[in-house]
Length: 450
Image (cartoon, rainbow, N blue to C red; front, side, top):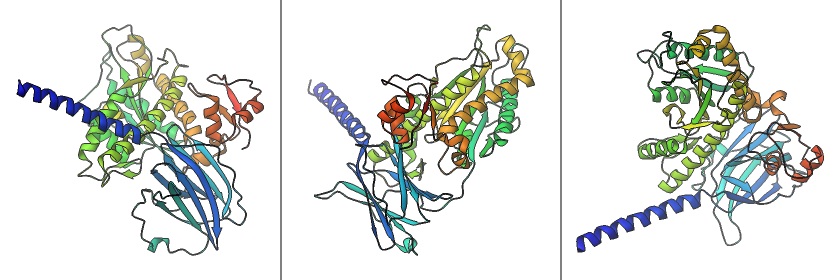
């Protein structure tokens, strides 16, 4: 009896400890509130102070033409509408913000080029955490200064030229792995490579976009190698192209998958298990040297944001694929290894059922391959109109900035759109003649100036 009692006691104790750890991680992952943004100036330095209730994870970078300072703060939201500051005698001409699904982006329009230096101040009797940014308009010795020990900014502060958005295209299977084989003997590996090459040509022809293929010929790659190629090329998006197959030869149509939460959890466990021996970079943040709870929180934030972005990308691709024929309207969720990059939005497109005679014939047709590639391309382009990286050429293009119009996507709310563009719900209603809060997917909203 004593032995049985001890085993039961230890089991219950273990469960309680596990619940405590999970609760701690959950609390840490709650959105961080930004309570105040203050701006002051002294001599040739403009100081920005962002006050948060919890320790923020952030990155800072500058952009040119025009000059801007960008601050991304993970898992953060404004606790209230921040009063507009007086920018007289400062290096700042205007300030705006965008509330994303799991982060807050602050953009400061600058009057001139500045040299920024940032550091984090711990709470004291009067204040919470304060992220401080000093913008110097004169000569600076920032490079010679020692980085404060409590700073957790992981992105280098440097001026970068605008870049192309990089899309990694992964043609499934290859080499010794033919994939599914159609009724007429068509190999999946062959037709998906042809579609991938067509998609690459379309993307490369679009200003501001650049595509890379994980394989350009009939060769075998491990699943991990495919995602590693995407990371090596610093891909912003990952598109895996496949052709479905089932026993029933009647099944037909297209579908799009993103990573499931279960798949994300298993990948997180693998990343955290090896992070003690490798400087894993997740969304530009190194996990090395951070305690386990913070590692969990950083990884969870990154994966949540990436799955949200992947789902939005998948929705846009589904919309365009449905114009070609039957397409599963709901985004699928699966634990595919090629979708497991925690910081690269990734989708897997099942172009058609190669096990269906009619669809196999279509997959072999160059004309249909081109239509399929264009549908995927249009979905990617539509997604990037609203989600191009801030430091990319595409983000600066008038066609992608779409400053005065927003097309409602499934699941969006009027208040969410208002937060995204930094305007009030009341202003949105007035600009669009809306009385209540009801909106629908596909609806076009005029965005008034903030």
